[in-house]
Amino acid sequence: MTGVEPSGAVQFATPRLKICVLGGTGFVGSELVSQLAAAGHWVRVPTRALSHGQHLSVLPTVELAAVNIHEPRVLGELLAGMDAAINLVGILNERPGARFRDVHVELVARLIEEARIAQVPRLLHMSALGADAEGAPSRYLRSKGQAEERVRGAARDLHFTIFRPSVIFGPGDSLTNRFLRLLRLSGFVLPLARAHARFAPVYVDDVAGAFVRALSDRSTFGQTYELCGPDILTLEQIVRATAAAAAVKCRILALPDFLARLQALVLGLVPGKPFSLDNFRSLTVDNVCRESGFARLGIEPQRMAAILPTYLGNESLPARLDRLRAGER
Ligand SMILES: NC(=O)c1ccc[n+]([C@@H]2O[C@H](COP(=O)([O-])OP(=O)(O)OC[C@H]3O[C@@H](n4cnc5c(N)ncnc54)[C@H](OP(=O)(O)O)[C@@H]3O)[C@@H](O)[C@H]2O)c1
Image (cartoon, rainbow, N blue to C red; front, top):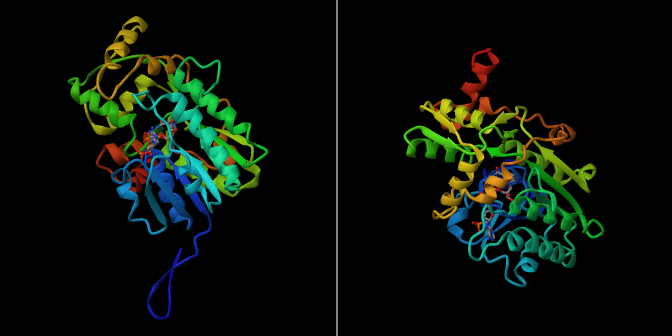
């Protein structure tokens, strides 16, 4: 995206779109904002604390804004002059001051209204696989479903696209890194709830790639994309793959549901809520796609087995891919 002028000065290509990314400092957001910046877009990222987005401040077309997006007028100011808004804000558990209804539903309703007033024509919205306003087993998934309904209800005012990924992995995730931490803390013997629950883990680069691909593609307007990796794995297989990639020992004690609920009750009281009853309820339904959103977007998602060693082990991605191409595991 850059060129060198005869004077020797580095010239950046004109950014193509102005995009406000809510939740841009998080795990998915950091990858997405990097990809958007690399594609030449100008990106505004609100955050509750600048320190959460420090790693993004080195990107030349990224602007961080320390604001409270729940306060009146803030969204309107953030969206002024934007070509698109992307919403990635999400929480896995409620805390005082951060309820699912406020963070997932009311925020989206206000975002839609402010986008309409600011005449922002495009909204990409991050949901979750299994989101269902009424039928989902957990409050997390029901609130995600209610947010989807709000977004679909705004079709007359803006071009929306909704993404529903399975669990997402990659450097800095709270999936593989959390299991690794728990394994180390527990002496490599992990009592695991819903060990047989099925997932299709999806690589964070691919998820971010789907957003970038959809941004200006009119065929994605009004569409919902389920995003799954190529392999269906049980939770137990995910933990084992994580341990193998990090070369640590791993013994899993698959908990029956009554003990898993007890575990959730106890851990739900621990600061940071590593696991809660609501998380347990989310795990009672399989997290696999009914259709391939990636195929519709023309993206071939990467396998977990190929990626895990690149950030949990000591091997670089090119080296790992070379070995896989050569038929080695
Ligand atoms: N990770 C997964 O496996 C997965 C799977 C399916 C769906 N999703 C969805 O994908 C989205 C991104 O997930 P992620 O893993 O990247 O999450 P994350 O790392 O926890 O990032 C969450 C982002 O949301 C912002 N945020 C959190 N609570 C907020 C609040 N109360 N008010 C305002 N902003 C708040 C944070 O911004 P600041 O801290 O900078 O303010 C941060 O940028 C979420 O909507 C999540 O539900 C994730």
